[in-house]
Length: 254
Image 1 (tube, rainbow, N blue to C red):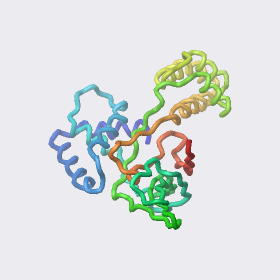
Image 2 (cartoon, one colour):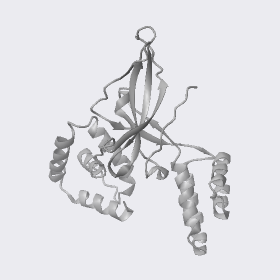
Image 3 (tube, rainbow, N blue to C red):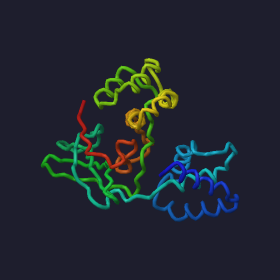
Image 4 (tube, rainbow, N blue to C red):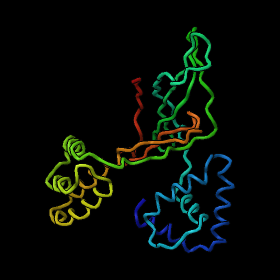
């Protein structure tokens, strides 16, 4: 979705009265709350991701924040097209099992609407007779909290840029302007300043700039609430490099 489109949507929500906001939010909550856990928390987190597009510093009510978050949320049936490519590792918790049985974690590549793929999980047990039992999945699925790496190491980052054939003169200037350890904000600011004189040399450096930022955004950690069951968790496409879906997961034991 374009920046212009996002700003227009937020602008329309800001023109609503508090009464209208509460009415619309009530309709959304009523329709979707029975199908999703922690719905309000999800909408608030989505608002936090979108608030950078706000063109005002006015104080917003929680209801309006929730509604903005809801407007930028899409319900998605992640396993509607296919469920395949399993990968299995032993579960770290092997307690309360009969002798000869072992508990495992199973990852699966799930394909949903538009053939966008993500990673879902199941758990189960293999008994001493090699019979496999898969635990029934929960009715609910929730995406993770994605945390972009707070600090990047310049040496490692430059090495990756070289591997991706992105380390041209413009990229070298960007990297030389940064400290040995830098944040995503430092990187964005450096690119914003240095891209101006390079714009006259054609669109190549704008593509390089997008590639540098995509690399930074592709490195992130995911976290789940401790009370979420394994089958409630999903790894959904998040970074620019994953917009066409996530490939199979392969887990190994350390």
